[in-house]
Image (cartoon, rainbow, N blue to C red):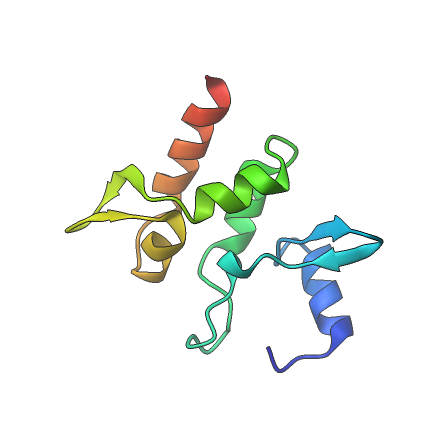
Length: 103
């Protein structure tokens, strides 16, 4: 990402990056990164973190972000990650998450 470990840790601590503790280390799932983007992080990661906070396991979160969703359609079904990269609304993704959580 072109930043120091301290900056990455700070971003995690401030809810700007999603991380998973595995074997006493933090792992950062790749769904949230976009190397081609100037900020190198997909849009709306903090909002996604807030939407899933304490509700889903990290495995469910990662699987959701990489699975095409019926209601995210712009020409074809999109994954939540692709939806955000294409400029889609984070509110659309939060609604899907909320409806899945309430079931």
